[in-house]
Length: 390
Image (cartoon, rainbow, N blue to C red; front, side, top):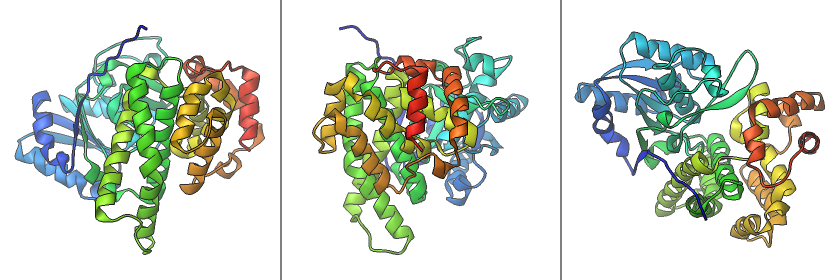
């Protein structure tokens, strides 16, 4: 046995941990760029809460709030220019995966020259970035636990990760209390993304003992808590009887939030596989939500790949009370149904005429995902799999 495991992130996990934000930011500078979205963090009061703590600690700040879902390389460049122009010494991200991923691009390009796409496609390399402190507001993407920043090139539609250790957050403030403002449809999408991260890391070619232990634990947590939590949040929003009592709700938020962070950590080492490799072209082309795309793609890919490692896929299937690996795809499809997620590409605006572009783009942005998949996969296989999603 031989492996390496390295993940230099300080994870601060706990209820109302965000109130200590200034203590975590202070070691990295006296002026920061706050990266967030246009409305949600402000509407929830979280932005003001963070700003108040920074002001009390005499930490100056500049706001960049132009990040959208599926963040663009051009947005990261714009944010980095603002950081440089204002002499910011660190970046503070408040938001979900899109915010954190864009903040990683901003932190990276604030100290590196040239075209960000050269770094994304490994034509140039650097391991320098401004220090990054993140406060995730969704429990699913796992961006708080890794050195990946997924960005889309608006000129080509290529959606691919910027990857380096320098953009692993210096501090990730993971506060379950912050997650409670998520609408149910967002929880469904990001929660399924977290599940996919852990399933793919556990079954990847590059899986190893540490990632196996963590991802198996996270899948177990999500199998138990994700759907009940979703149903509770949906019931509350619709004025219907609650699903979970207070103690159960606390445990559910903690468990799903923890599983999300674990998912980010394990893919930093074990990576993701074919399903993510096929989803990125889809959300790059149609600007769909990542977890929604995975809900269509993951079950189909698992049904194709399970026989290449029946022991591992079987272990995951049994978490969901299914007999062997051949049933894991159906178990995932059941969760998709329970989360009210989409089950085919037609509902997301795709036609079969899109398949050639999707297949071609997989081979532009996701050759690493193909290589990390335990089953042998050809271009024709990928074409057939996309067709099964209609």
